[in-house]
Amino acid sequence: MLRTTTGWLATADAFRGLDGLGTFLDRRSDDLTEMLVDHLVVVALSVGIATAVSIGIGLLVWDRPVGRAVAVTSSAVVLTVPSLALLAILSPLFGLGWGPTVTALVLYSMLPIVRNTVVGLREVPAHVLESARGMGMTRGRVLVRIQLPMAWPVILTGIRVASQLAIGIAAIGAYVAGPGLGQYIFKGLSSLGSVNALNYALTGTAGVVLLALAVDALFILITRLTTPRGLRA
Image (cartoon, rainbow, N blue to C red; front, side):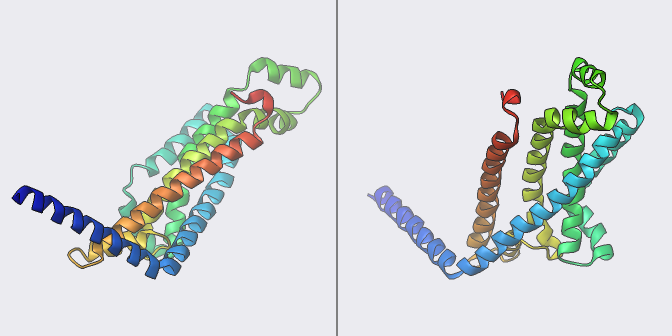
């Protein structure tokens, strides 16, 4: 009988927790929407900058062994720096908020894009390049008209990985007053023991996960729409 009563009490507590979370979300829907948009914007901006820079670097070094090794190794070294430490280093230089967050995300996003750009360009079959040159195409034209389209699925995979990485790290940007859902995660952690501490942390975490899933689905669609039919697996 005591076990049954305890079970009913646990179930009642769970339902009260769900009701509390529902009320929490309803009262803060405007804040959540704003943070979700900010999170998406800071990731899109950072990955966009990283994509432009990284593809440019990949185009310059893909056929140069020394330059290729330096570019890939340099971007890989950044990932060994803990995100909190990097944000703390960048905040005196860029202040708080968007500046250090965007800079950190750009640096963290470069490795998968640089590496995949190099790999994609190097995987274009040699006989295809020779045929293009045999038709009188210049080196630059071969790169733009032949290699880039054939390497695009691999490059896009790198951008997709970088976006997922940036979505997660952007949450830590709240450490330096950065935008996004990380504000709720840090607020929940800093107020442990209060009524809404778990709601803050859970809402922020769930928002990051759902955003990552939505962006990944978007990249699947973009890959299908932008990959030439002959290159689709």
